[in-house]
Image (tube, rainbow over all chains, first blue to last red):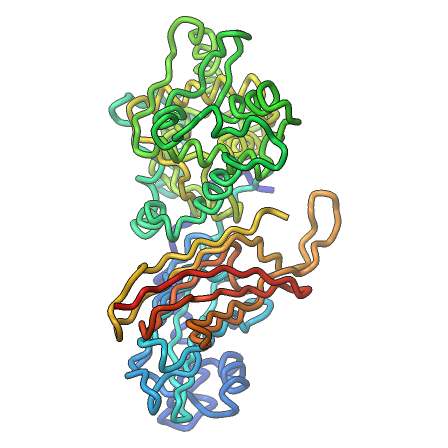
Length: 164
Length: 253
Length: 108
């Protein structure tokens, strides 16, 4: 066990370099697996998880905003906010918003069921994230389509040993 | 060697002097702006779930007589500022008591009920509630008279090197303030946010729980909840924080 | 178990048609299961798995929670003010226990 204040434990906040690495990796995989133009450049694991809840449909990007800290202070409680552009009428509304954390032990994290009575498609919640990973928010629209937004996040483990 | 490593080495070589009183800033200063906002937001700071529990206990009857509120009527007024004066020396026993100790004393001596027990959810709730009634009030504990020997003991504890890592509180909590340590930012050694909701704990905890985590961190003896050692240290920390606003229930990483 | 506390924050009144934000903070450890406690026992999974909200009897929001939801979870959603009535909140816990709270919205 290293001492709790050894330089090795002082995180140099590697957020940027890590994100760059992941972005390159994701792009490479997408290029290999999908003919251009790829509609949603998600790595296969996440794509499969998404396909499971969209009954195979590939969600479009856009109209959905997913706010999540890129550098998470503590994975025990991570604030997220999701907003979908929608008139939220009987004819055109968001049916649900689903969150997937691909590297959580149980990747399906939460689902929020909305409807015309919601007025707006706006949700905030607190999640638990096991590790640095890609997190996605998928919204199901009343017309049958889906929209997706995702984010690569780095979880800075607050690993101070706590005996109390 | 990283910048933090060099700073650590420098601090270890020269025993850091204690921070001057006018330098010491509240623990919340070292939170992200988002967490600072959440601490202030009663609809969002989970510490208020414990405050709410404490408020219910304060007037609950179920056979307990007197209730807290039968002596401390209108607590929002009558107890405003009370928590800011703890720890203090109990006149009858000559012992140093903190807020948790005073609540337990009421419970046992006046209500004739078994003590809740340190770090029990009920005691945390009551402590958080009473502390919240002083939110924003300046700390005003005494280090004089009967409190002086306790203050001196607490100061000695804070400055004494301890544990396998041979570190004194002051080396990190004055000498390395603002540096990163395992994903957190080192703050001044004060306890104005406690009891606090720590994300790491997934719950509310007392200052003594936080002190026990520090003791373990430097591989030193973990003293008991409510021990004389931690009480004296708590008094010293409160004197250091004199005139800073009470923040409990604080939100911490 | 620790006491069940729920803090529901929303306006007491709203104009008809106005969209109001409802914030819900609830006390629950959300035990995801599998951890070993201080006595060496494996903690079983016990989470709040669903929050259902009705407004004047009509369902307006549902939150399906899994193990990736934080302890003492917070959620915020919106609803359109239609008529004066009660918002009713029901949480369902693993094992079948339920907890309920209500809040009144006056529509002018």
